[in-house]
Amino acid sequence: MTEDRRTVTVRIEGRVQGVFFRAWTEEKARTLGLDGWVRNRRDGSVEAVFSGPPAQVEAMLRSCAQGPRDAGVTNVIITDQGGAPPSGFKVLPTH
Image (cartoon, rainbow, N blue to C red; front, side, top):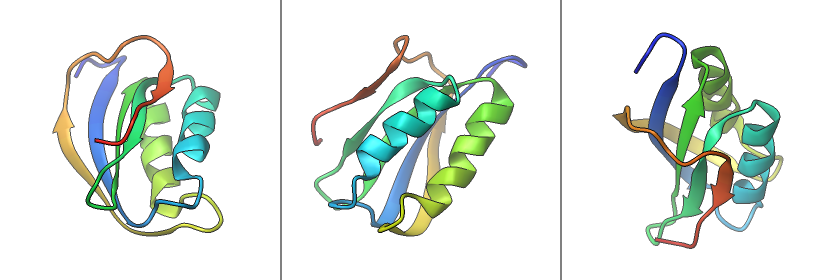
């Protein structure tokens, strides 16, 4: 992590699949100017990488704790920090 860029990998748990969480995450991340990706996991959680200015990454983490209207987020866990995702933000296939 550098002072001007932070990269985190997170797992978001709760009612987060079937509620447009990935599309919402992509839109929110693009609005905040973040790079990274989001995907569903077979265990029912959502996994994402967010990379960008620390304040915007922090804003994204706070937003993920709420999620879209029909979501029921119970936990946002940072599973890794660092690394450099590809430029832009993508929705990836389920893993």
